[in-house]
Image 1 (cartoon, rainbow, N blue to C red):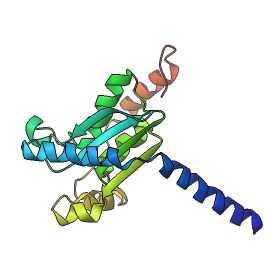
Image 2: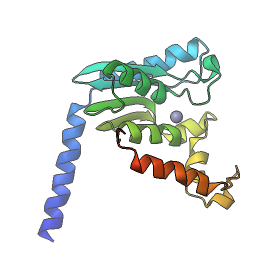
Image 3: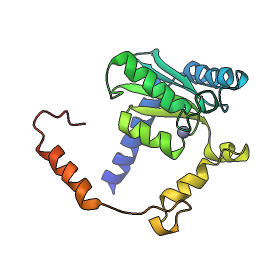
Image 4: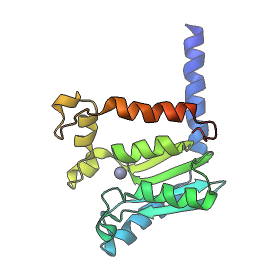
Length: 176
Ligand SMILES: [Zn+2]
């Protein structure tokens, strides 16, 4: 019991420690990024910045309309910008500030990029209220394939598995 209490205190301490690094000015920068993109009609009202060692090293806003790219979300753009600056495919020791809780696509991108923390301002319910229904995709993710609104069909698995075998045996690969 005492261990559980101690562990809980440890987790709260850890969480506070993480929040201590948080700087609300970075969130304001992320929100302003979103405003800039929205006013320029580049996309929806979403902005994000990536911070490392107390400096903004990547920024992005939604550019879905400008680029005709449904994946050009603020977080993805900020991650791409930061990775380019770092010449790295990972965001180790970086923090992401985003004006809205990430959609499932950006959540995936964040997990692949592996920043140390994410701060968000509006939440998914706020986004749904202005017709950006990320929550619908979150619900789809947890459904069985057969019950998703977009059908997924498995074909040519064996041929694709051969590609995986080649990857496993590839001697000059960079694992990530
Ligand atoms: Zn997104």
